[in-house]
Length: 409
Image 1: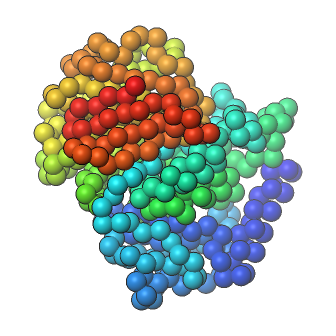
Image 2: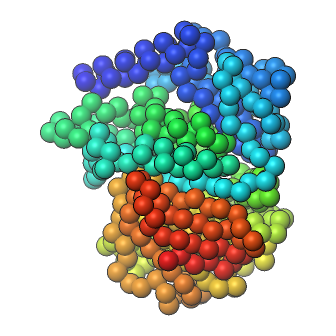
């Protein structure tokens, strides 16, 4: 009863926002073809709000129509990536500068409520995503990269757990609003986003919300577990977006290895110099906690083996709920993991990172931190300087990435 009442209040809030011609939630993300995608969530019976790009009116059309799980309407307008002035219903929206100098990286941000783990979503210490989003927004990034896993409230809060009492759950608008859109509001307003799909956005989990709300491709009525990779060239960045949501971590099913290899081969062969591969599941990592001693992701390792171009410098991922860097030297791109945005952290692996062998390459440098936080990357001479911050802005690590050379301390 409490959950139904909260969902009703959330729907009322959406309707109230639309009644005043103000979208309940609005943001800007990059579409798969490189365009800026302006999106808004409004009341089910409202008209899509007006959008202007460099003073010219741009049509906004429905992307997702209301239904029982999503009693709201999602609208979308597409504009050129070079747009300098962007507004929705008269309110300014963020655009991308000609040169990207500062990036905020977050991942694995939702509040976990499932069969095995329950977080206290009402406790900002136990679930600090809102504080992380506010702190990252205050750094005034040019671009935000989310490395996947937005939706975590898969089951009802246990009756005896006051820390998440009344939380919505299931793949529906109240859950997506509570897990992502409300806590991310300040950061959504700060810069355009690059959205990476995580395994929590598979069809059996949060797939409906993903395709309706965040997927970078044109709207579709069905849900699929695998989508095509795409390249984004943004202000001096070359980002290769790869959907690894369905890649098994500790198995390498031949069908999946062949499928992903078929995607990797032409995609990586045409990678521009200094490219970064953005994919939710790390390609090369050591497992954590009770699985310490294993390596992951076996599916992706099998698929990418022999296909890594010299142009690829870095793999940027989430999925493992810690901050971890693996530097393999010049023979392989560095692997950076930023899975610290709010979901329950994982115990670090018991074995040392340095000296570990992962799919035929030895880790030359390694760093790991099991603390909540976000990464700010600043462009500098010959590469990028990074600072890993806690939710209260304490400096947890300083990093340097230049080509395939990477180090955090």
